[in-house]
Amino acid sequence: MFKKVYVPIDNSDISDKVLQEAIDLVKATKSELRISHVVNLEQITFGIEMVGVAELKDALLNIGKTLIDQVKERIAKEGVSAEVKLIENYGSDIGSLIAEDAKEFGADLFILGSHHLGSFSHFITGGIAEDLAHETQIPILLITKHKQS
Image 1: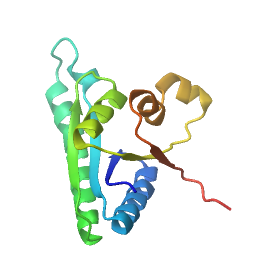
Image 2: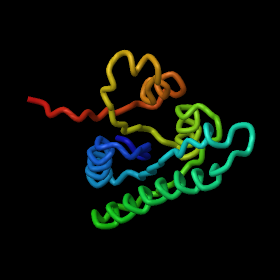
Image 3: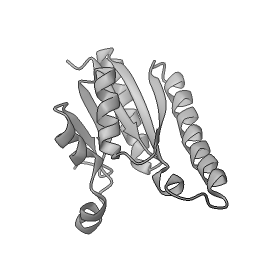
Image 4: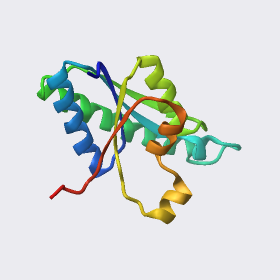
């Protein structure tokens, strides 16, 4: 069974469902859990200094920290122990950052949410699950918004 579960989250609705699935799994299996959130700062820190860049960076980091605090509060209420971390990204591929962090953790399972962006959006933005499938050999449990019938 899985011993180390890695859950990258964002501010989307699906992340709540992903987090609950992870909580349920680690409770049932007594697995270790690491939850991460990547704040992408590349666009605001690249190149020249501009007015308001520091404030925008602080705002984005504060949004990320608020999410992390909410996650910590939720897992504490659920009685689950987890490492929860904020990763600052200054230009790396997000999938590569997550894969590297998961490897350092020794993860043997990813739990991810699927946003169902549509084929054009997926073509433009790619997908973290797809990136991770190429970056690692760690199994991926993909959670969707849709209920099964």
